[in-house]
Image 1 (cartoon, rainbow, N blue to C red):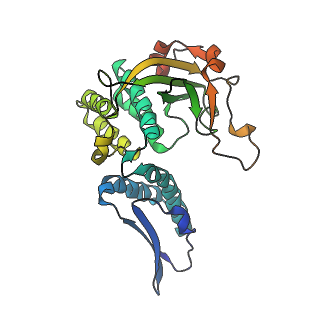
Image 2 (image 1 turned 30 degrees about the vertical axis):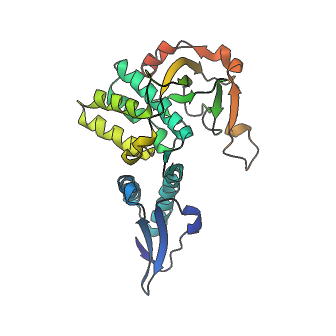
Length: 283
């Protein structure tokens, strides 16, 4: 990307991430921003990354606006690339993806249209909420702990701002040797259900890439689980949580855990989640 000599770039050290190198080149006439792919195994996800930049800067009027948008996209994608390692996604990220896929699978089984589900899937966009169906938000958690708890990773996850309702779904699973599901098998199940709709299948595969699920890493995703319990909670203003408006200035990325016993009164019937997007559920 070429810019005039007078344009300044942010400090590039803050934007370096795995598999990608970003550096400036200066000539007599212009400044150039180079983005290089270093790991060819990431070429599919790198293509989406570059496409995202091009789409965001397409309507920029000034060079400064284009630079700002470019580095906003780079910051977003740095989060993704930084969680990919050479042995696949960490087990923590696998569990996060497993929970989201279990929810998608349940909605498909309930007859919800695939394009509605996939367009509501916010996880790949690094949104605070995993799913948004209009003004209804869904946050999904999965744990295999013998002493389950709700692990909240930032102050935005349980914030109801700009939402009419927010629900939190907790999948409690256990490790098994057989008769269970793996990350790979769940992906395959959903792909089969989407196979008759090319656009939905393509969108699903793209969303998986955005979350760091790469075909080259499939050998690392054969840990088998079995569902034990599924709990659904209505997150209201009384729900025990930490949100941005409660934090002192300068404090962010607040992670914390909530005891299951502390939210017992907010539990609702799991079957209600099948009707969430129709606005039929109630506390």
